[in-house]
Image (cartoon, rainbow, N blue to C red; front, side):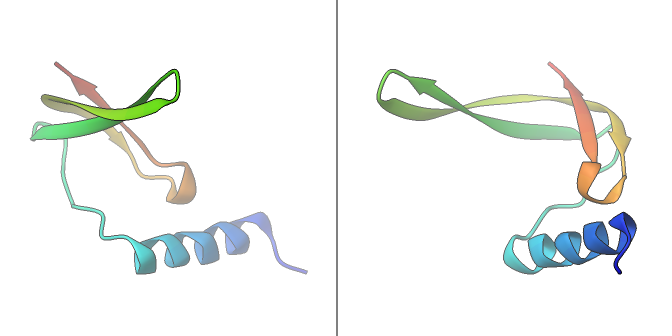
Amino acid sequence: MKTIEEINQSNVKKILAEKKIPEFFPGDIIKVGVRITEGKRDRIQYFEGVCIAKKNRDINSSFTVRK
């Protein structure tokens, strides 16, 4: 039986094989696109800011950007 950690690691490998995720660190200036749905329309709104935190936790990774 697989543990949750093994399942997460296999999912991370699948995601990394499909998409190229750029490497960045806290202190870097990054541009982030957010998908916004307005009625039946979708659009992507971009904003630029400084990465102030990054948490590397396999599939539960996250980062914080301040404008």
